[in-house]
Length: 421
Ligand SMILES: [Fe+2]
Ligand SMILES: [Fe+2]
Image (cartoon, rainbow, N blue to C red; front, top):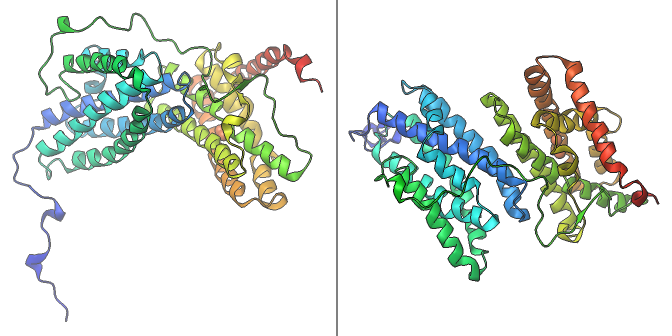
């Protein structure tokens, strides 16, 4: 019989330092509450800034990071409820120095300022606060938080590694001005006692004058960096006369879905009374549309057609941003996506065309997952527009969506002559 040398097996499931006195439950709840507030603010800033960030890669990364920040907020919300505490420990920071810190970051004036505040100051401080937490709490009694911290750190490390590429890309002659902005954000962080509140508190009277005066408003256009030329109306640079050309045309359409992602980000930022699950769905919707755009970019790149050499359509900003956020979302989730579920044609039809007609292996994979995502997007529209916002009144939701279609047609009427063959 084979037997174990029992004393050689690691005790405490592999958890070490179990006799560390650690932190009290109330202290843990207090810090987790701050982490929750930070994650929620990161979600809001990433969503509020995505459409006005010009650099294409930064924009796409915000699409991903805002979804991951939303999930992190949920992790902290769940944990706080297990620590004899309540979500109000997160929400109460809405008045106070942590809120002021994020308001300043929200008022970054360009890509480089946002990158500096986010990746050179706030995320490194968040990372350090999480590591400090795990170094101080008892790893056995507080194992669920320790595990949560480790999982959040996995994502944060990705965000920071990406962010470093942005910081490295900052023009040298602008670095001095940017350090001043970084220092400005750092002082506001100090006034909050750091991310976790354990640092010395810098008195508010020592702070530089705030950048923010009044509410932040998302600009009424979608920014593109200097590599791109934008197009209005939506004119596909490829035609459908041959299968290879029609394939390129489909790739370009995918690549332009960044506009759908930008629309989702603006809705997430402005829709104030959504339940947590609604923010998760909107954030995911944003990241899915970002990914779809990257599918198109990657497919075009493989065909020797870099995306920045092709026209970039920015139309959604023009005809949907004037509408309130729910109506704006109805244009995407009801007027556009729900119609793509019909077959023949629709999302399934696109996938079949790539698989059977064009026999393009990579686009078949892309369209397969695009179709899977789109099924979920239609469900998000049903849940948050019809059931939640319109209280189950399908006709009201449809009317809201129909109005957006009429507004889109009215907007594009001005280009009617330009688009005639
Ligand atoms: Fe999509
Ligand atoms: Fe979609």
